Image (cartoon, rainbow, N blue to C red; front, side, top):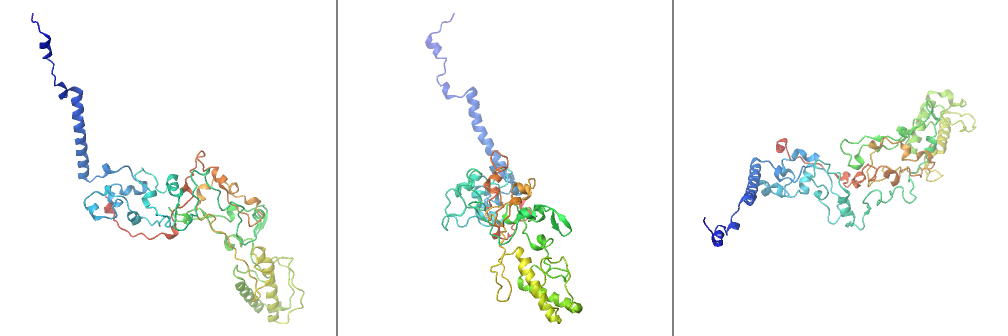
Length: 432
């Protein structure tokens, strides 16, 4: 039997074992080298094939999906030819010039110091989302400490998280009043059983207030949006029930124009009538319902000729129009006529848009009744502001209610009245 000493046994141990990789260590080292090489080879193959997907941080928005494989359309590096020539547009930031090549958007807050770039707020590669629907954080980032070149900003700055930190709407805050210079009573018009042109009728809000149709696809552009209420006009909304009849013998009303034009119309129609009916010069008036029955003609003796009849009728008809018909709705600057013998009525001054710094679309709100937001049924004064307050909007637009309450839901950050025409720069082949 062979006997081995401890020294002989120790010679069997490889003292340099730690210098050589074996087993799991060897595989770990091989994979650490092979995987980066394979990744570089894959990136090189993709780049050689012209596919830019490997350089993209994520899918672009729905509106930009057509150019997702053409990075140079947006990443122009300020239209730097060297960037395009070297084929590395993914390394260039998107410039405002690239955005304005396709978009007609005007500058936002040009008086801000410094003014924000397009990509400051509209950040792409966040999935198939709408770039205009930004998070409140983008707004608060600037408006929290907004600095402008024209003094303090007019917009509210503590607006984060509607409705908790949003101020009350300026249109209804602090006892605001409607500046319209008219006599109008909503409660009377909504009480029912009104005398219409064809008999009793009941008016609904939609009889006078209807949304006007805007341009398709521009719901984010404020005044151009679908669902803005069309202006109420006399011809479209009032004339049906309030015709301007001025004489029992004239079968049609006067036009709704300036007083001097109404005077010319009345005298012209009376002159035509008496020329065609000379027998009426001395004929007494009959009771017609074209003018109020409680507006009697003066008990003058019969006219002697057509000229005298015309002067008398015109004076009486003007007295009816100025003192009764027109004054039913319009306010006089003064109770005394002007130097031309005509009244001076105040401009109606009806507000076209109550919240010029915000936008509202009635179209998605048609499921709720008008009276649930606008308290018109109890309004008896023209000065009543019938807009809903913040609390009404917060019934649905709140974090726990479901409807979105972001800043961009109401506030339009571009002044679309200052949009510019777009100069086409591409052809369909540029996006293949």
